[in-house]
View (tube, rainbow, N blue to C red):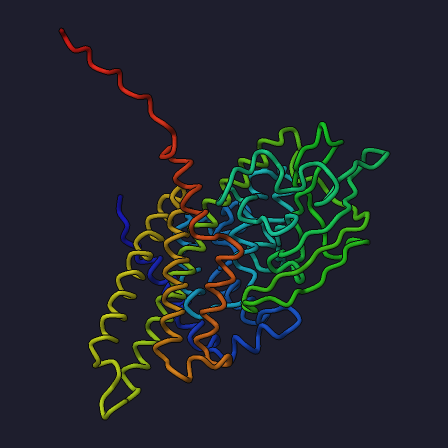
Length: 401
């Protein structure tokens, strides 16, 4: 294994850090999230055209860059440093892999090029607060209960009488960037209860009967929407032959998404730590900088070790996405602890809700609610690795009498 980044990857990091450093200060971020789109559209187009950011996960034959998950993780680490509000994760981290894995040739040719160019954005809609389960991060997604279990609830799909399309009815909450996405990938049940299957459907933003409402959330830098579908026309993603293919595609997407999210969380934790170190160097108490006190040094040293350990795990997961769940658990824990300590070490000013340190604290709390909690991420990873499988007891040795 060679974990070193290539010269090209380092150039992506340098260029992205330079652009975001100029355009994504805390004030710019707060202004961007309060727009109708929830992000800076002009900056999104600049990142798409200059760096090909949304096309990192798209194959070259469809107009993308055709990079590895490590490149996308590297870009998201830089985005995490400034808490960039953008549809990058929802589009490139969740929807592009699903369209690539399940879509027909015509669907890939129609959707992937504009997604790679940044002209379209996409969002994954699953019913209820079960995104982590749907992606097989905190539980098995093959049973289908996360999508409503075939009973009332979730989203139901029925074929048109003429067999020319599908109609969706139901609702989904906590859809990342769902209020502004050009295309929605909706998980819905088909058939009756006894023969229910969970499949994915494509819904256009202008589809009749589609109602989208942006929700008030803890972390405004990761906007969410509530989606209502009232007899909405939809197109089946792929040929729909096997439900197992959908579950496998969601699980594979979950592994890569976890690696990307881990890198993003590490970037945020590293920046929160850097801002705290800068503050304790300047803030004086009793005639000296508070960073010179031994107790403060020890706390910062512990944070540094935790962030660096999470960064190592995130980089390994970028190389081997199968380890994404464990890396995400460590990164989310590092971000939560670092953001909390950042508020503590900023003292009285840090406890004011308007202080920039709370942007990182909100991201830590919201991400763990969406993709965790940490203990469930670790428990599911251990279960998949077979750590909880009881081993056969060894036969007792016969003792000669």
